[in-house]
Image (cartoon, rainbow over the protein chains, first blue to last red):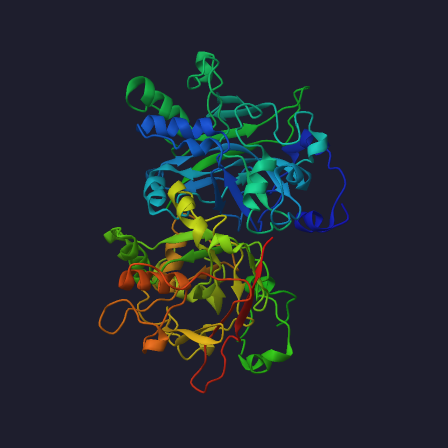
Length: 294
Length: 294
């Protein structure tokens, strides 16, 4: 690249970024590809995840959730690097959410979903850190997430869509690996059960305003139904597992009446990554440890 | 200033910025002080405004709204300049919201309201453009404003708190002037009925995360009760008027059963400004015209 920052590259353009560097990730200390961004919009595109939350609560999910994307304006003034700690009070109900995200160039207002696909410049992984105990009160106020969604962590590498064999133009196919304290926790496929593709999400965001270059759009927690259509089983039981603790707790609630798995505790570690066909890490890994606050 | 951009100044520090330039505003074409920002958080600190909305709807307002600030993560990837048009479909229910905002330096996580006051570097005016017809459905989804709150306009000048005679450490006292199509529409006092001062708002935002330098915090629509404690009367009837059309419509609804004043139509003009004791414009004026879309 002939530009000084990723933000400048997104404004002026750049060529193909290959994933070669991901092969020696251990040798570097990485920041987020955009250590701060002018915009982060996070969706909930795997509607299965939303349906499970509602089911565990005994609440009805509006039918419109299958046709009208859920999306919120998220914090973007800083993104955590892939190895930065998750700092928080365990009483806040600390959780991770593994998701796919794209970074756009400039997006004109009123763009269609079909046109929006061509504005996607880069793809990366996110850990959308969530404070579960603070969410219900904030959502009840109607103004969305603020205290309950602090800064997110990014994969060390963001790659262009054309270098991704699993990219179909609007979704990324492939296994999103999540390990929790060294054990497999999630092995969902990001290309399955994504109700709204990234073109649709970008068009939703740009309905009433343009989006500046460097806008990050998140997919929301990747979530797969089980083969029989029921909620997914844990990896240890032969299932695809989960991309956040909350979903495992919901399945436990549906099965036993109460959640069994606690939210994140100090010292807990989460690792999030994807591999290509040859087993090479595509984006490098997000690998974070929980540090108590204050 | 010895720095190239306002963002850099907020990170590295700068001296007092005087309001002298506001005296020749007509000679310049201004952008927003921060044409794009890494973070905009908008509150609803004049709880009177929220209470009126609820009253007009016949809905109860939770008592907690008087002690727990309403605040949402707003769009910041671009701010309109003071004379940029408001572009939108009149069917969206276009409205303005005149408010006070502050720009912070870096804010550590967990800061107290008392400490937070010293992080305020600049004060300015905002027009928080709102799409009233899109708000109810978005708030019902719980994820906050996205399509219903497009880009906001800024006053041409932002000034340091110590140069404001009306600044009391947490609020800005003085008349916020709003003219609508050349006639006085709002003459509220920004220092009155502000339930949460800016220190409290910053502390609320920083409960679970630090805030980057250049974070813009909005007060929400400035709104005053009438002298008798009832909803404010229009300026033409000797009252202080309103800082948004929605509030005038709510008062009309309470008084006559139906709103009388339409939302913004193509060609409508709104002007927002404040004056010091000598009648000089403090921040320059936001003055925008409505352009239809598409």
